[in-house]
Length: 188
Image (cartoon, rainbow, N blue to C red; front, side, top):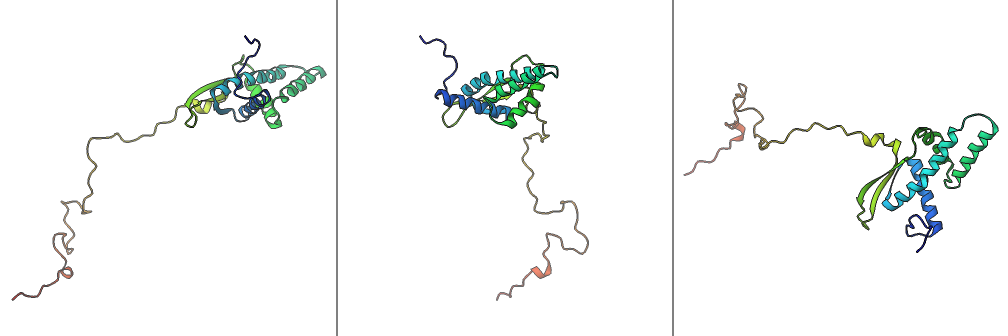
């Protein structure tokens, strides 16, 4: 029995798996929501949450002395080992960490979507919990006419209603205009 090997292998070597999880973490912090397989989402959640906790704790340090600033820089460098993009690292410390300052963990959510058409892999959305305001709002219903059992009204050949008489001097639709009538030669 093998002991001490936790986590999912994801069909990858150690270095490939580490790169995949770092890329998923970077994308999650940058976009706040990513679509991936369930196994990758669950593994990336385990990977991302300690990074967010480290950033949150570094911002919670108070004081302006040199020791506090050294601890903040150290936390930024620790997270920088996993997240190589400077803009994403800045987003983590300026946007995400202050927003989750009062949350005691559980910064991410995995929402299962169903199976992918190509290979039937189970898909999921991995999202940061505090950034789902747009998706949680119910969409406004558009007023549509209720369907009826009546058939649609057929198009009438005349544009005028039947009970209205045509203006005086105008030929009625039942009478042909004189120029439309052609005379036939008399038959013998």
